[in-house]
Image: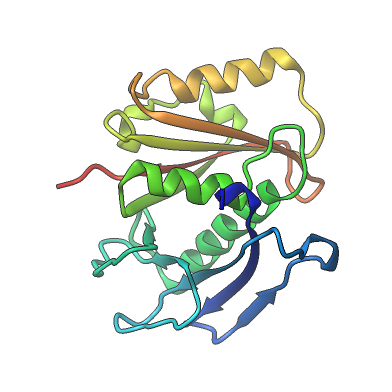
Length: 208
């Protein structure tokens, strides 16, 4: 069955605060023709964490955290050393960005596409960063370690619709330092919960 036919039961666990959130599929999404996939977002999970149900796990870890990753398990590491407060804020932003992109929109980058690209990339470790649109034009993307990354997902979120010229300029900047062989995908979401326009990049780390 094609991954694009899947629906998702999402679990979010924060092992620092003890908070747990469960998101079930909408009743109208469930059918015999669609595979149910259990997806977990785990913030600062124990190294020996095991799941009996999750087919896909994204471990959201602190900077320089090393963990063993078997099939269906991926790590998203914070790009800087920080205290728990800043780390949790970054982790929540990552999860929130992916959830927004999973909702119906003009440029969709849903969980089906996300997982498909994770598998195809053949990488296990990723980073996530967010910038205001005003930062993009002057940003040197070589510092993001994306030049040799096989995959980069770009999430553009704006409090209102943006004109096509600004949209193209942001895409051109984010893609200018990426390898021609790299896979890429873009999402655009309009959300009143952000100020202005922000651009997030989710990309695979270079293998050692």
